[in-house]
Image (cartoon, rainbow, N blue to C red; front, side, top):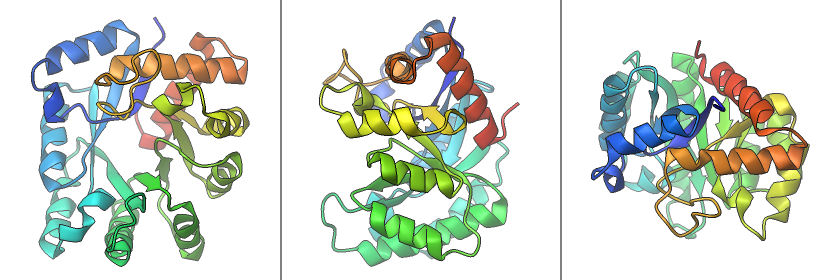
Length: 257
């Protein structure tokens, strides 16, 4: 039994409606002892809180507004998010961040929603879960400009080893997902090998980006084992050693006992 956590998933996603309970069972059977379910808007944030209440000590909730949802976010959403974060089951704020992949026309709105949520993370003293896609330059610039930035996780890391180490120097944890197992992932492999062990995390981001050999299928928390195994290989560790390392890191960043 490995005994580690999938630190970022979307178990509340409708894709799990047919077999959510079975997915939780498969997760536990695989040696994944828990997961952090991350919201992407107000509706999904409510769902993750409900799921955390249904599976206490197994599913943990993060509430936030994803950059893809930032265009339609308004002040009432921020007020509602503030209320949701008061729930004891909400251990983090997320996922939040910047996503320029689609060259969106609302980058400034993304930044505003991001800054508002980071201020909320600092105010509530909760870690933040950051989604950063094709926007590392702007995100690092924003972090550097802040007198006080929230602690937290760079989830599903997608940058270079040098970028990863810059985040580490600023105090963040680096989380790797399914793409680490893909055949053409030299940058991710190098980053994973370089990040200090006390800053490494494992995730699935399910139902998205299933690792090899499940690539192209619906991802689920049980498949975090494949990411962990690849991480262990790159680090020269056993899977059991890597499980304990990442479990302790997950507990540390989220304040779990």
